[in-house]
Picture (tube, rainbow, N blue to C red):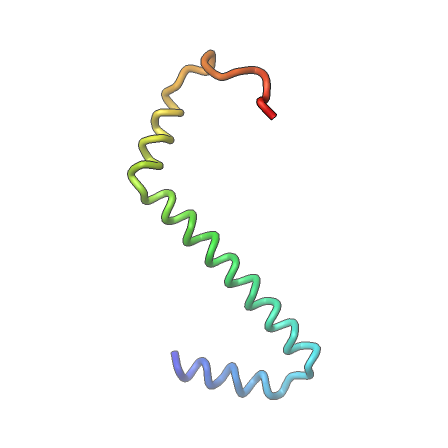
Length: 70
């Protein structure tokens, strides 16, 4: 991994500032994607969420209201 970091840093030195900003923006996008995936994994893996989802799947549609509360 350290070798990859060194290569990335070397490549960054060859880019114009505008492109370095684009690389930085892309890193922020990737971090957000990682955060969302981590939250989704945590939700899916929790037994409570599995139980709640299963309970809602088994709930008859007639029990749901046709009107929105908001």
